[in-house]
Amino acid sequence: SLAVLFWNGRRDRMNEFWLAYLAGTLGVYALFPYFPSEPPRTAFPGADLPHIVTALRRFNLWIVGGYGIHSSVFPSAHVSSALSAAWGLLAILRHRRWIGWSMAVYALSVALATIYGRYHYAVDAAAGIAISLVGFAALRLRRNAF
Picture: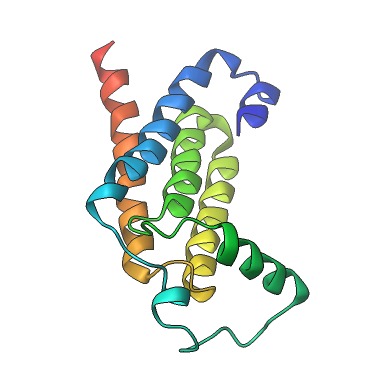
């Protein structure tokens, strides 16, 4: 996202992007201690597994099984950070909204993939979307303050 801003001549607005992105991303991490939870793949092993299992998926499950964090999955930082990037791009690149909307489509595909892959529950993704809006609101408030 920062490279996109740079290539579009909006280097001067990177701090605004960081505000939207970090508020949405770090806001999720601040909530983790209050909602300890296990991901569906470990809470319900064997239940409703994805039907497509590739070598890459097996490798990923090996990594998250042995080295993943099992302290909390609510809200989804995957979803919140991807969508916060989209909101930041939409707010800053008003002349090229397709870039921000493309990032939003990517973010929503991340949400679906984390649910399908059983990394998150649907409510985790929904909460991630809500927290990403906090970052967007922070950006709007900052703009109105100056």
